Amino acid sequence: MLLKTQIAAVYEAQKAENEKKGLHTRRNYLNNFAPTGRFVEVIAGVRRCGKSTLLGQLMAQTGGNVAYLNFEDARIFGFELSDFQKLDEIIGSNQAAYFFDEIQNVETWEIFVRQLHDRGEKIFITGSNASLLSRDLGTRLTGRHIRHELFPFSYTEFLRHQSLHNSTEAMEVYLEKGGFPEYINLPRVEILQTLLKDIVLRDIAVRYGIRNAKTLMDLTLFLLSNIGKECSYNRLKNTFSIGSANSVSDYLAWLEDAYLLFFLPRFSWSAKSIAINPRKVYAIDNGLVNANSLSFMQDKGRLLENAVFLFLRQRYDALYYFREQKECDFVV
Image (spheres, rainbow, N blue to C red):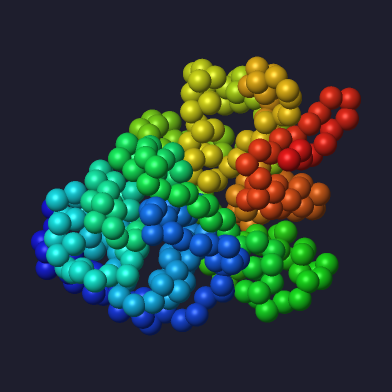
C-alpha cells in the first residue's frame, strides 16, 4: 500500500516527463487504429517494442485532458488494488481517456478497469504478456475489450526511423539489426542480451516459479539459434534432460506468451495431425537473434524467412507451413 502523496508525486512526475518527450517515429499501426468508446483497448507486445511510445502517440491523437500512469515505475513499487482509489481521486474527473502502461504488474487490476469502463470511460492499457492479460480480461472484461498486438519496427517503419530509402543495402541492415527502436538508436548487443534475460528470467522464470532457470535459458538460446527449423517436445525434452514433454510444452507456451518466440504448425486438414507434427520456430526480431546467437552471421536466408514470418504473422490469423515430399514455407 502506498501513500496518496507518493502516488500523486509519481503521477505528476510522469506527466511532466511525457510533456518533455520529443516526437517519435509514427507507427504504422495508427493508420488503421480506430478505437471505439465501447471497448477497453488492450495493446500487447514484447518488452521494449514501443508500446509506451504508441500510447504517447495515441494520447496526442486523443487530445484534451488524459490520464496516464506507467506501473513499471520503481517509485510506485508495491502498488496494489486499494491504491487505485487514491489514483482515481488524484486523476479527478473530465478525462478524455485513461492510459495505463504495463498494468498487469498490479494484481487484480482488472477490477479497477471494469469500474472505469462501467462509468463510461475510454481506456487504453498495455502489457508484455499475452496469456496473463487474456486470463485477467476473461474474468471480468468478457466482451468489453479489443486486443491489439504491437511488434518491433517493420521494414517500412525502420526506413522512416532511419530516414533511409528502400534499397538492398537498407534491407540487409534491417535483417541484421531488426526493429527494436532502442537498439537501432544505439546498436550495442548488450541491450538485446539484457532484454532477453529480462524476458526469460523476470517475465517467465520468476512469474511461473521455474526452479531451473538455466535450463530455460539454454532452451531459449537453442531455439533462437534454430529459427526456421522444426522442433518437437520429445526431442527438446531429451536434448535438455527436461522431466517431461508436458514441461517442455509449458516452457514453449510461456515463451510465446511473452512474444519472444512463435511456433508455426504444419498444415493439415486433420486437427490431430496438426497437434502431433513438429512445429517450426521463429523469433520476434532478427536483431535479438543475432545478438544472442552465433549461427546467423552468414545465414541471410533464415533471417529473411524470419522477417517474412513476422510480416505474415501480423496480418493473418491462420498461418502454417507445409511439408510432404517438398516444402512450402508459409501457407496462409
